[in-house]
Amino acid sequence: MKNPRDDRQGPEIREPSRRHVLALGAAAASTVVTIKPAMAQTAASVLNCQIPVPAPEAAGSYVASDGSLVPPGTPGAVPPAMRPLTGEEAKQLLRGGPAPAGMDSQAAQAYANYIRRLQAGMSGFTCYASLQMPR
Amino acid sequence: MRHAIALRIGPASFRVGSSWRGPIEALAKLYDGYPAPDRASAFTVRLEPERPWRRWLRPSVAVGGDYVLPGASPLALEHGLLAAEMGMNLQMALGQRRHLLLHASTVERDGRALLMTGHSGAGKSTLAAILGERGWRLMGDEFALLDLGSGRLHPFPRAISLKNGAIALLETIVPQDRFGPMLEGTPKGTLRHLRPHAEAIARMNETAEPAMILFPRFGADLPAGVRPVGPAEAFVRLTQSSTNYVDLGEPAFVALTGLVRSVPACAIDYGDTETAIGLVGDLWRGRTS
Amino acid sequence: MPGSRYAADAPHLLRKVELDGLTALFHLPSGTTHILAPPAPEILAVLGEGPADADTLLDALRSRYALVEQEGERSALLARLAELEAAGLVQRA
Picture 1 (cartoon, rainbow over the protein chains, first blue to last red):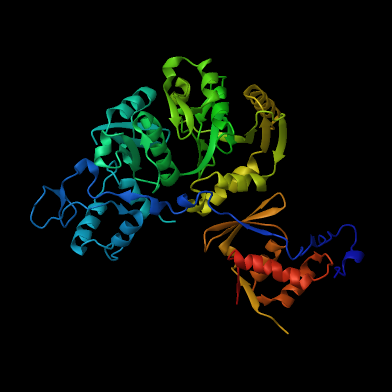
Picture 2: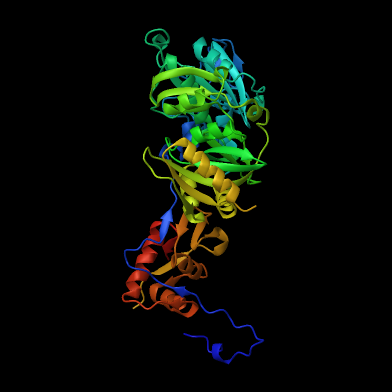
């Protein structure tokens, strides 16, 4: 409905702007496009990163329960992880979640502490850092 | 890893470890003159055999590192340099969080940057390489880094990846000592790496304000053409050229909408490199401010 | 006969940027980006003020805008709402 004041305004009084034209479009029209990642594999980068325990630079060392690296066979220490932990697994573990399938829970705790001690420059550090980043 | 090298390229540092000496030696030669790495934020890249015996028997290089793409095919050892490049690209594509990453080449003049983006084969690396030898400063041939806060572009001047015909073209204008080995039969065809001009390396920390976006399209018989591209189309195309737009969330939305609203964009069609260089020059001179 | 009510997030949960006649929209709760053409942004703006069924929504649009007359405007509106629902920007309340 037209604004009833439109025809009666004096020249100095600013007219309210005319309502802009809007069309509802055809039933089959497309008015919403959702941006999807161009490469599906890059969509969840945390899933693509991994943390070897221990880092290859320290291959062979065992992992003590506090996460420090010790000589193989040290009492109370666990052997290296059979395979690197994925970013997702590490995230769950660091939040106190369950150990990944097939992983001994005591070993998983040692690995979690190892990850918490990762320093810049060590293999897996950037993966660990990206888990901390708030979205 | 038996052999290793640490490199800094723009804001990123890489530690590349390898079971073989060859790729590390090739990297050292190609990246001669690059500055010392910043240990605090180094990505790890590993070039390793898929199985232990593949270190010697038909050696093949699997690319590992902080970030991996599961299912990626390994490469022959003689293409180790390409494996290293792919490994570094992967760390950037998946791990870079301080910048919005766009698949684009970037060249700079008078503090203003030109972004050229498009699919592989569109010519963005070749055009950037040539412009880099004609008075422009090369900031990068593969990845453009858009700072989420300032909206400025940060250099990432890795060795330029030249393919097929572009190799011969650049060989006529750049001295041999800046080239890596000729790599034939790679998954990307024939490849040769080119170290950027010394000035590009010296100024790798100098950011620039984006001033123009181009979408080049190459076709052997394509007549030269220029078409303006509106901000909405440029925005959508750029999201598709980014490996981390979705991950970065709101700051990326703000940075990218800011970019397309402040910088004009054009699509250019060309059938040969000199025509493209000419179109770039015309458009650059004709732009406002 | 009133149909379902539709709801959209409040405006402070959206970031909108106009780009040559289209609206780029960042939806904070889901972290997704969408490009919207009219009348989608206008529909979201009305629903952002409070849930409404299709007829109420149609009336609101008619009073705020110069709605182009067309056949089947209710089914056109339902089609727009279905698109917005598929994108996660509108829910049935």
